[in-house]
Length: 111
Image (cartoon, rainbow, N blue to C red; front, side, top):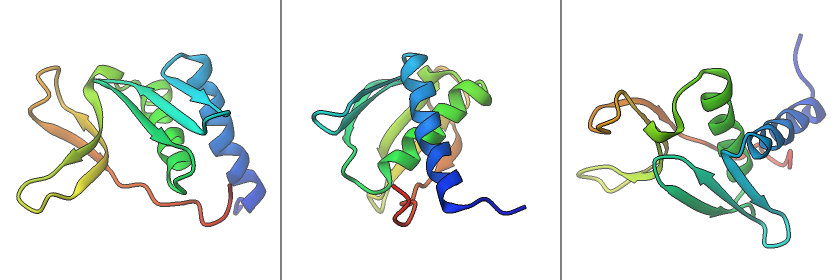
């Protein structure tokens, strides 16, 4: 069964609320910003179309898949091309070995 656009939208919002309740996200609707509590605190604008998707997946990685937030970082610059990785999960606490790389795209008008 395919999900509808409304169901997808509610999944993203629901995950953001779960992350906020679990204190792994801090959402400020007034300033339209979100702070991720992970390997380092990372703050981004909710005005960016892909940010709600990143927040949703971060929440799932931590709460559903049990990846420790201390092993997750954001906007990590790659070498040598200087691209930015949206979410990077490291294999260990030393944060030397990348384990999961997540590239987020907008939900195409769902939010």
